[in-house]
Image (tube, rainbow, N blue to C red; front, side, top):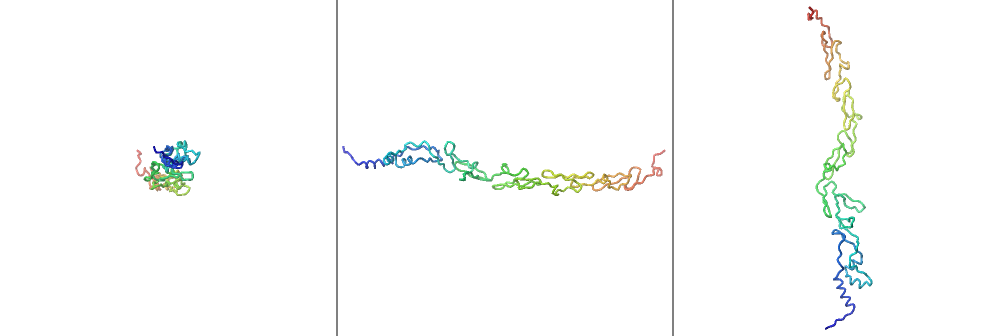
Length: 259
């Protein structure tokens, strides 16, 4: 039998290689597959140099063969820690992306957003008008544009489209009511009504000369109002053009029915 002897440093060198080739127990990742666990220095050094060599050099040191019970999880981009400390996907479409200043920034503004694991993508144009996600006023029309939309107040309203106020056409004198009609403002419009003794739709009001007494019919005639004018007709027993009506002498003319 050949006995092999050597110094303690020869043994230490041997143990160094053995220690480096036998790392500490592999650590289960408590952060999930989308994060990394930041461990304490003792455990990290032990993993690199081998537990035995670490304890041999640092007398009284401790190599953590067991992974620490807690650690700080550092998530990959597109992930965040949940209540249990596990790195989970961030839904950028609904939550936005971190700005670095304590608030999130919206993504895909005006376009369809599709979330994916750890990322997102922006798709085609989003029709805010059809979806009802626009901020146009009730009395405005919404027009979709690529990546956005526009708002325009309806006729009879004024504003920037997000706020539309009624226009009082009667007060402004922008109505088209006739001279002999009254103007009444309504929401988004106005109405016209002819004055008494005037006939029409309010935009055109024909005076009723017969009612107004501005006709020139004879005393023994009837006045009939017409569009834009009037007519006169002599009463029975009178003859004339209506403006002049003379009595008919039935006895002389023999048109009577006396026996």
